[in-house]
Image (tube, rainbow, N blue to C red; front, side):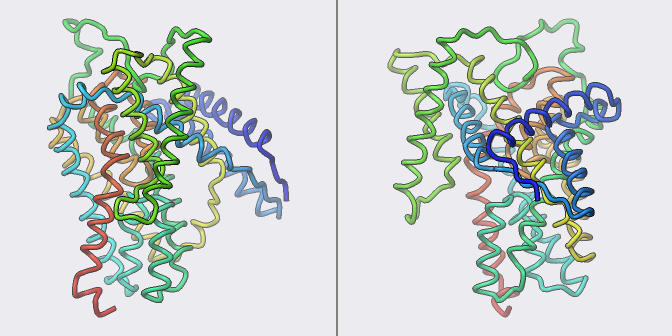
Length: 402
């Protein structure tokens, strides 16, 4: 057993990012299919750790930094949210949310149908649907406990975590290829000679240089820290009430309020370039730690029928993004970037969605609407509508008899 402490894990995560950058730069396949750098590096390390485990060598990381990095990322999403811009994208947010809800319904119907067809408990099908795919590890663990205690489903928590791991891996892998396929059908903004070049905003192109100063850096760091503190306090106040929300949603909400309140009062204008730098650093390190810490042997523990269900779910996600998300969002370049993002949090999580879109926009050019819509839907709405959809399925007479 090799255990890395906080500092060792931070060094390892940094090396994973450098490895991912090197792989994407040098391997044409990864670059062509827009595979995010943290995903490329993280999966290579996860596979190496799987090989080491066959020799009875296991490496454990200190993941205590993972949650603060994720919350810092969502804080920067909130600090980047200009309400005036959000009003302009109101209709687009609504349309994308409908597409997201449609996928949740399809995922659960597909999971239940395949589980029944394969002779499994239909609850397993629901657990391999939107609970673990769109919901991720947190939602999966919570519902796994419910299924074990209330419905007597054996090993529900283990199945939930393994399914969420599968989704996280596939979510980071299929988004780029889906976008590549769709972009062939549209005109990329950067290829239009009549369109003036536009500087990237926010998280669109993380590798573009952005001017910063030490003082502005500290100012932005202070705003993120306030968002984290106030968001955690708000989460504590709401805990156990009808208005309880995930911590990252509270942090994002505080960031939105902080940015727009300071602007409305004329006290301070958030430096978006600084926010994007810190947000991209937090996102990259979070994904690196999450992916290099994956226990791929948990996937090997999945029974063949469950693996079949999850493989079909990944295929359904890709087809849904191509034939539904892309079309309802306008069948243009922005729609292609949105489709890549939908693959990210339709199977994994919002950070994976952002990484997918960054891999696309870094190569083809900015998509402001995509980076406006996906974080808002992925942070504010996905968990809420997912719970509603899950409870509606559980209320069916089909499950009442279980």
